[in-house]
Image (cartoon, rainbow, N blue to C red; front, side, top):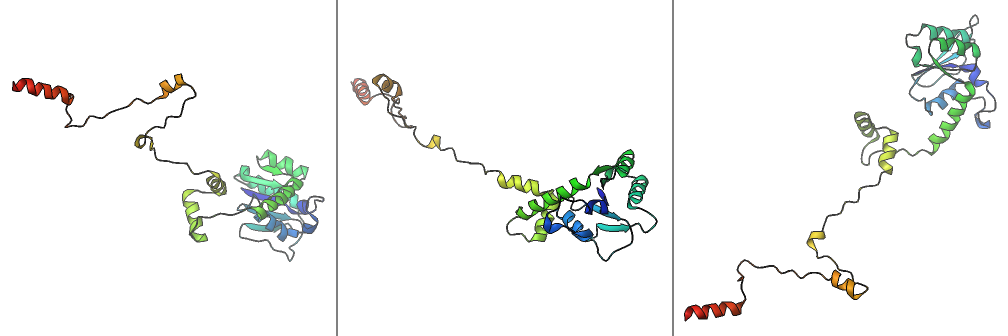
Length: 220
């Protein structure tokens, strides 16, 4: 996605930014975008007039000054009209003429106040967010693993919050079953375990007394 920002229209919104962020200028605006949901997107700040001494941050940011004979509104509408992928463009403005024009081309838009409000909300989230990485890995190597396996922050949060399975060996066959004491005599008869006896391989199948009698008879 690429953001086209009607810069002066955004910066002149009142009642949105906190008092300590008033008058942030283009540099401050870029810093807020860098810490927002739009981080990583290409950003073009379109400004009326001639260049000032302020500069944007990062290679994905560029500022276009339209000069004395052209407005920022016209510049934005022309850029969207000439784009081969207008649906990938998000225009930040509250100007009705711009909105009407870029909608015909299929571009999206967000109002300047809503955009600023989103930046403020995202800045609060960023300050309280805990960044986790695999233990024992350097930040660079951890990032390489994340990119290789497609692991993002949402996946990391889900893995972190998923409890480990409680795997226990089945030892029921290795120990006798416990018989709980019954409350009455009838239940006791039902609950009493049946005595089991295992016959050894060399053990005779008949009682000793019978075998002895058989030997005596055969001997006679």
